[in-house]
Length: 169
Picture (tube, rainbow, N blue to C red):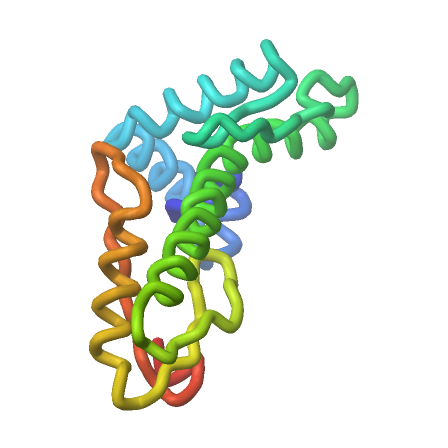
């Protein structure tokens, strides 16, 4: 239910998804916030920041604007509140992936490896790698991506390999 709560799922919505009584879904949500009180604090802080400034920021300071945070229309306001909560999370992840792509591109160009980046999907970078270089490239990718930013919480990169995207998962 992590994503549901971050996206503001209601007891009704959770009950529908899990096919459980609404009262039980409400208890799940309450228990979640009791177990992880910092999440509720974060959510309230993000909404307050958006109301005060009209935007929230990623961990790198990139602004994510929330123009409807004070809208009179409750649906627009609720959407902006969800965006204020989510944008720093997804925006920070996007920033990290972009930094990783730049660092990885530089590392690949500086190496004798024949790997090349093909595309990025959310938090994944897809590469085409000569079969004989898979292990060495995987180690390089993991090292470069995990070292791209210095934060108190380590970034753990999982590397998957295969002949196609599905096989790599």
